[in-house]
Amino acid sequence: MLKRNFELRTMARVSLSGQWLTAALVTLIYVLIAGGCGAIPFVGSLLSFLIVAPLVYGYNVIFLELHRENKPMELARLFDGFNDFGRIGGTMILSQIYIVLWMFLLIIPGIVKSYSYALTPYILKDHPELKFNAAIEESMRMMNGYKMKLFLLDLSFIGWALLTILTFGIGVLFLDPYVSASRAAFYEDLKAELSGRNASEEV
Image (cartoon, rainbow, N blue to C red; front, side, top):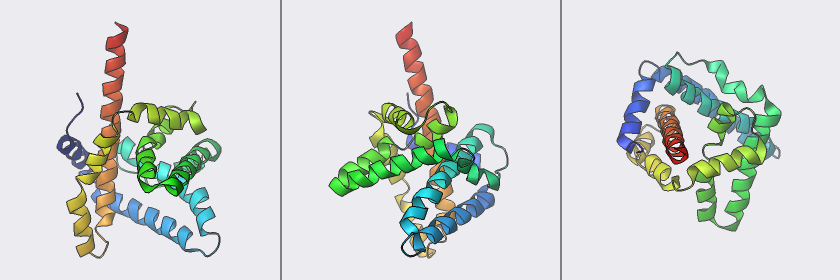
């Protein structure tokens, strides 16, 4: 049985204990790079695909490893996506292209697809043999029937999001790590749930 959202948030806070300032620094660098790429005239969108997509992978994996190992965070891991750019960068870019294309059709289907693809960074980390559509399809398989669960987890942070407005956006440096750590806990919980279900079906 999947953990409830407050349990996932509790696990996230435990993993972030003693790491909040480092997590805020990682988030600041991530936001500055992503924002800087998008702000460059004419080529900003292209740079966002080429540079930000691998960073999204690195950012998510940092919190996945923090959840698993509870070791001090390493800023350099933010750039891990560039070490295998063809597989990781290519897959992340492809997933973003798919989401944009869905958004062109209708906003709601685009949002739904973004949740279908949400586990792609973790799958790329755990399954180095997967890339491109194979990794994306594995995310879709795992998220089948669980997209609303992740959406409600994200929605549970709405109060925190409102607080970031009062801090003129500074609060996002702590909110994003909290959300990302919670999503990492969700992935681990879902993976265990699906693995247990498959094992019981094989018996």
